[in-house]
Length: 154
Image (tube, rainbow, N blue to C red; front, side, top):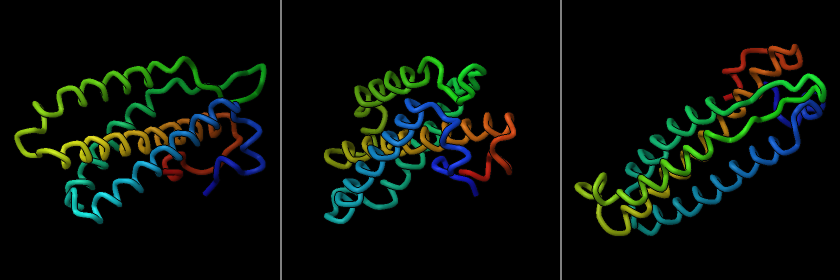
């Protein structure tokens, strides 16, 4: 399985895109570590946290795949177009956060509700990383730079 940092792949990915991918990964890992702490001290049940991360991951993968990743012929690199998917994700998260009591408040209350929202955010960021990574490898495969099935990189 090929990786983003492989010598034959890394030079063909725009630096800003690579940085954005690693920022998504780092923030999602940091939030997941916080969630693990919250599960450990008993502020949220582990199954509820896992459900939130899964819901967020599905949304993130969809948004990551919708992101405009394309091949730039002049620089011979994979680039990302304007980040409309990021704006959609931000608006979606703000709407969920503002209406979380109305949407999830029937079943979840207090601290659990706040941590559940963070679970959705962590999952969305991680899913976005996976979706964008898959899109990058799809473009690299189309250019005969990467090998294998792009779906195998997830």
